[in-house]
Image 1 (cartoon, one colour):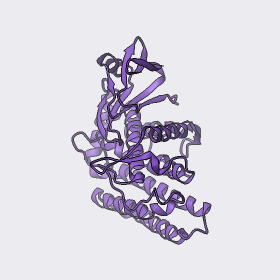
Image 2 (cartoon, one colour):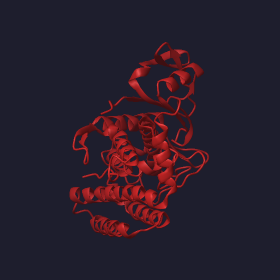
Image 3 (tube, helix red, strand yellow):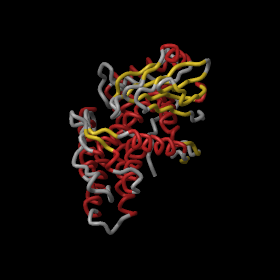
Length: 343
């Protein structure tokens, strides 16, 4: 199994990254703030006004260190990567399956089943942990509705219908998401999912960490030789990493949503860590952004027994494990693609 490497998140505005031999140097106002060997890195994510020297870009491309540039609130701006990896036969088979409705539907269906199942686990865990809250009835009804949707997926015969079902399940889940927030209700109220820009503190957290997750999933897909831009559930669009968005669906609830709920409910972040910009977008201040990233990194270093592989791996390797299983299925080594089903 692949070893989990570090992801370097640079959030300090005005920071400059450059190369010194085989080392990534981070400086601010001419002062060195961090030195880190490039071989210890899986990726670099830069937020806002952070710049990088061309020699360092070249080194990262050469060493397969994926570099992403995001806005301060996590909106994707640009990405730097080296030569495409993987064999051409695998990618040809990927493109072939993506173009065939029946083949694409098999993979997309597995992804949607995983997403809805993991949504239900979030709701059912909340019910188990807080069975006597006023929200218990609403959460139970939503969980039951999601179960009914899951039962109907086997009868779906088109990608268009599957996308409609996926959209319905997502709406149903987020309709009750506010009921999962049990503390700091005056600062963390969730009414609906919004983005570009996020208009409240909860959506700011969701958009921010979903962008980080997309970086990790894209890196995993590149590592196993799949094309992150050619998906099965999400339609292809220039500049959109459709397969990365497909695979992300399996991890949104497990890696992001539960983490955000824990940060809020355990009061590890607070409302004063968010700023409203002139455009109405909600941004995190530097301190809150760092807390969120540290929590995400700590979460990735925890271990889980993979439900299909039946071996312990670090949570941060889940995208890689699923990308590897997907590649094996596309090559014909597996009879079906086993999505990540949270237990």
